[in-house]
Image 1: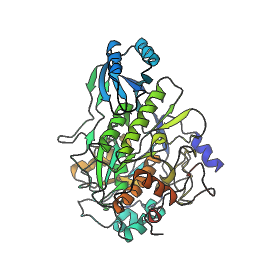
Image 2 (image 1 turned 135 degrees about the horizontal axis):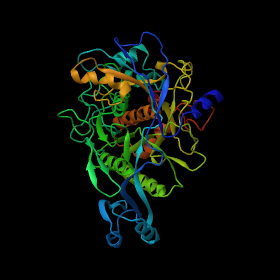
Image 3 (image 1 turned 45 degrees about the vertical axis):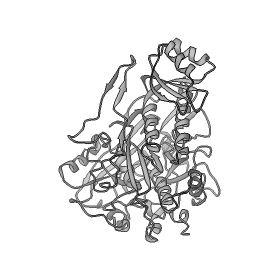
Image 4 (image 1 turned 135 degrees about the vertical axis):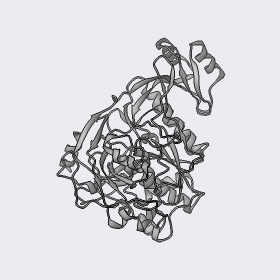
Amino acid sequence: MYQMRKNAARFSLGTVLLASAAVACSDLPTAPTAVAPTSLSLSAASGAPTGRTVVIFKDTSSIPVAGLSLLASLGGTVNTNWKDIGVAVVSGLSVDALTSLRASELVDDVGNDRILNWLPGLRIGPTVAGGSGSLPNGDPWNASYYKSGVQWSMRVIKADVAWAAGFQGTPTTRVAIIDTGIDYTHRETRGLVDMAASKGFSSVIVSESGVETTLPDPQYPGDEPFMDNHFHGTHVAATVASNNVSVAGVAPHVTLIAVKVLSMIGSGSFESVASGIDHAAGAANADVINMSLGANVDKNEEGVSALLKFMERVIRKAEKQGAIVISAAGNDAIDLDVGSVVSTPCEQSTICVSATGPLLQQNFDQPATYTNFGITAIEVAAPGGNATDDDTEYQTEDLVIGACSSRASEATLNACRINAGGGPHLYAYAAGTSMASPHVAGVAAQLKSRNPTLSVKGLRDRIQKTADDVGAAGRDVYSNHGRINVARALGLE
């Protein structure tokens, strides 16, 4: 355990770890292969300003008229009025205006929004070809990577026991993937995405002077604004629901909703993420919201407390609308029980998920080397794959395999783009709490499919109480209530 934590400590905050990519010509790798991580620095942990300010009013259910007048008198223009949770997103406020707002008896908190990298510490492994052609929907136990044992996570959480008992989710259950979008053309997700309810929120960037510029990701002609130009959202989505060609979904037949809040490099603002949550729980009518994204922020940094309150209010609103919000804990091996660092939105979500995974295909329930932890933050653990910075300590198959977007922009995944030309459909190995969270979202979707009247609290309690106790006996800092068990959650054990 000491060696594992020591390795994890060398993965730095605000860094994305990328692995070299390789393309296999067959469905499966011919032998276990190690993938050496390399580093690519992105934006600083504190982010870049968007030119907008989040104003949190003391009234949690409305924005007082006097509050709007105050904003106008200080030179502010309200860009978004979140009147039902007492939040306004405003441009044009000076430093002096912020000081005046903080002194107002109407205002609880104020902070400048920022653009962050919401996918730090993600491990990306090789890509593999899943075969050409468009195959019909299959049974999850016949998905080639599950059948061969490469997709080990579904056995670990006993999703296969649920499938065999007839529980595969229903199309009336709706799962929103708040992420980089979904490649709705991939054979694993085709026909599962509600195109009318899906939406993009990631294209507007605001300069410090307050001027909005639309900077959409490079699009193929005819692509919808929620197309995944990264890879991450597609990988995550296919873990929840899939056509079961090469990878099986936890709840294969539920409906997916693509809510794109992050750009092709994984960046986005608090406003874009919050807008995605609000759309998913409201207009899109999602039962389950998955957020395999997160940022580690210092709650003592100026303005951060307001951004955290913004996230808290939006998520509580989503829960009141009937959506359970499930999020990834983060990949920086941080003890969230101590210090001033907060993992958001996970620590504000209904369920915050840590990651487990094998090393050299042994001990599938050990904490992943990179996972954030802490009993005050984590509710449950789920398979996220495992990797260290020593390539002799793990192999490719220790990661989680999933669908790869045909529009993937990351250089190490450029092989995935051959999908766009009708070639073999590609799959990628990855590890992170991002991969763990959709396993939990799949359990929630299974439970909601079986009992559509189950409340958000009922879903949360059921997932926690039926988890397998792994690691130290009883509740622990890595998995808290335990690692999820689909079969037990459905009453099959």
